[in-house]
Image (cartoon, rainbow, N blue to C red; front, side, top):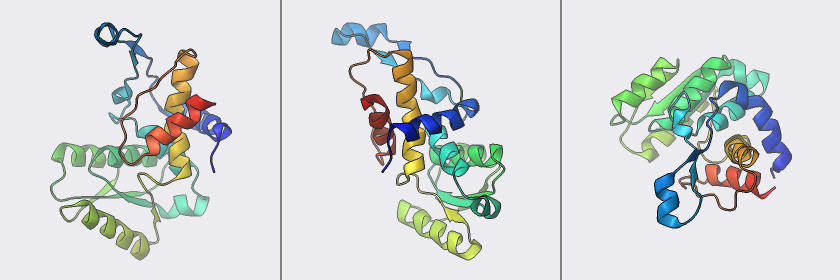
Length: 191
């Protein structure tokens, strides 16, 4: 089980690789709600999404043997780019399985960060199964875009940044997909 000290450790690892994203006051949302609303523009990360901190922290924490062999994952785009970029800066081979109908822009960006892209299938089951097949065949470490403690605390660094910048924050709203982002942020802000 992860805790706040794990978020602090992740923060010390990932911040040198991420762009600082300061909170931005939203006058419009503040007027509409009668509250002070700030936004955290994680879209300003080099890969265009919040997923970079989690990807860096996951890959950083692999064993030397796992790093030597490489990683594989599947994604429609944002996680693909984050893993590709993190793998490049940490010098780890990355294979990313993306659906044949994935955005060509995201495929190109993923390749541009140095990952090998395998286009396969048309849905999430196809790419998940193909990434598991590649992991087994090539002895690569399979990275989950949702279920990993290092991923959760890597994402938690965003919550830590919010609280460092604005310690009187009372409420944080966060999008929820697989749950790793909200899990990490909640862990950081509740401490």
